[in-house]
Image (tube, rainbow, N blue to C red; front, top):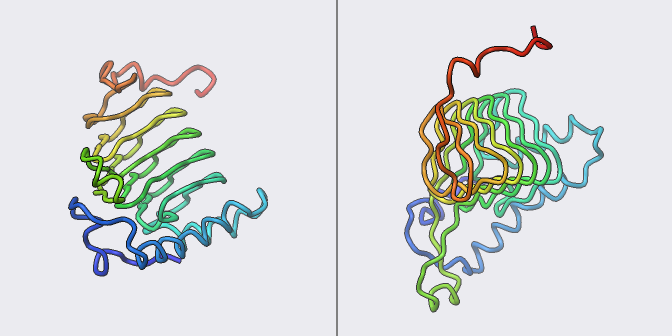
Length: 201
């Protein structure tokens, strides 16, 4: 079950500190996890039901998106927006306390984590379960390798490649190959990258 939190819980999306242990908020979050639980327990062949559940779970789902099970998301995808033709491989983890936006034709490898939740440096506030959130935006035609972690507030531009195992802590401009911990731009996408291998011709 999904619902628009922007009217009832605007603080999720404004970047302000809030108490994440509010009982009402916790219960609403639990409700959003029901469809995710069903999705993760569908048969591998039940693709029609999975497609239906994606539309129940996610904030927005474009045409011909495919998400492998299992997935784990704080709000069950309630704050995840998928463009058209998005592919997400196994074991995706989305800390979707605010919006995660993924552009058209983007491919996400297995065991990737996209997080939006931040915790204050003040240990007393952390102990009291206070947090704040920063959205993550991924552009179109991006390829994210396996085991990548994308941190809160990051924007990745169109056509980027993020190498496997990278930890993305800052924005990556469009058209870049970026790798490492922390993730840094290695080079531009260049004309040679557009040449097709002989097997594909």
